[in-house]
Length: 145
Length: 433
Image 1 (cartoon, rainbow over the protein chains, first blue to last red):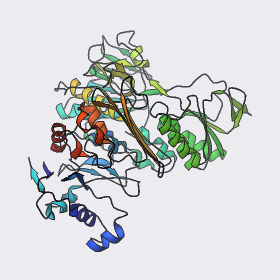
Image 2 (image 1 turned 90 degrees about the vertical axis):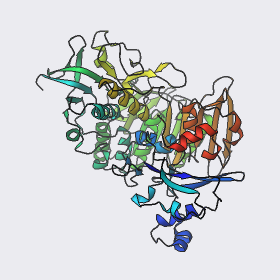
Image 3 (image 1 turned 180 degrees about the horizontal axis):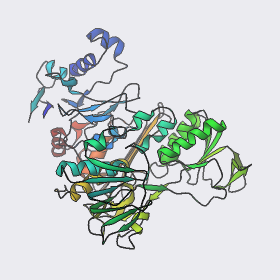
Image 4 (image 1 turned 135 degrees about the horizontal axis):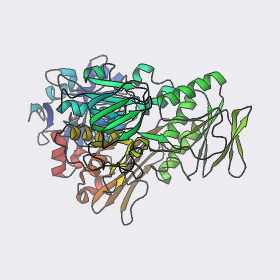
């Protein structure tokens, strides 16, 4: 399946991907409004990591053999039969954090309200996820490998 | 039920059984499957019973698979029927009602049975165990009918702690009595347990560690309190006994020695038992543990899923991926304080190096245990985000010597992982837990 891959040699560490993810998953969908008023309620699905001068955007790998799916006690974590994306149904999630414990990429986090798990949803089937679309240096790509 | 025969017979209806059935159907679309379950319920999630009792999850959300599950997977479900006798030479399982089901391949996924210590008065009305939905239903009705104000939970392990939380959510004042010197003793070390205990105390729970319940005190045939060793009495109208579970091996034992049983049913890496065509998976099974390589009964959800899946593949004759054993891991939230423990974390093995970082407010504690350059245990309390990075390192046996100093830093992430392993994580192949 198509996955998001980081190209660390091009990443500037600007974290625009995090902002765009936040906006995409906000109520207002407006960058200033979302950043000012909603950022305390939304956990971006992408996180920029850094080590010295190297930076790198990381999100759920939507693994073929996904440990979070096997560990989920509620059935909230599920695979979309059409896209293959691993998604979390926040309404079903009870916050047991088994997914947080088992994700080898550390890509599932507790949502800001700590009630449900939060992760990349590949922008819910959009043609191109917003982090990829808005990266100023093409440091994140969405492709089949 | 009347006599029947099937290609695949699965005794059990929880995570291991379901994972097995799904794996069988990936390989064999048509072979007949019969599932037999003592409980009369549709597939539900046992770990959710405390959330159900607390009112956080309703009946519908207890379903772990859609209502159409049996139909979708062409399974004949025989619910509310107990399998009582196994004849491995004739390939037949007998049910409590006398019905007999012949099989080509059998999976025993009967789970665990709660341990009830020999406390005098344990038969008194108002004393319950807490491992299945019916238990939670009984406790819920009892609280409502008797207007329970105080309860004692015996045992502060995973089940005990979740029971405490559920009772508190129902407005019941709870005392938890634990024999060990600390709560969650199997999963947490002293420092972590202190934080968990504080979270319970802050929520109004009385915690008594290093104490033992000697008797349930009855008044007018009902529980009125418990007496501790030493004579102290704790008044209560409800008692939940949650000191642990043992594998439910009765069916296996009924085969007269043909199915080898230690603590649980002994299985190899394809979940085969000592009897031909008989498999076991989940809490009833005693299979390989990942770090020690020895066979242990490990009653945890992801391990049961994996074992069930492997059993299903093996039963259907599909290729079974290399099984490297079950990894001990637990994630339990205590009144909002998240705790995670993976591998050998509570007690570090001799010669191991232990890294620790702590913060007082909000409480956070992180510990990594390293042996021979590899992470063998991790414990996180409070700030648990990205805990799986450690689970992955433990699971993969990656040498972390070069990145050791980064493990407990703020910026520790995928970028810090050794190059080869990092490439694997990023590829999205996943890992098997």
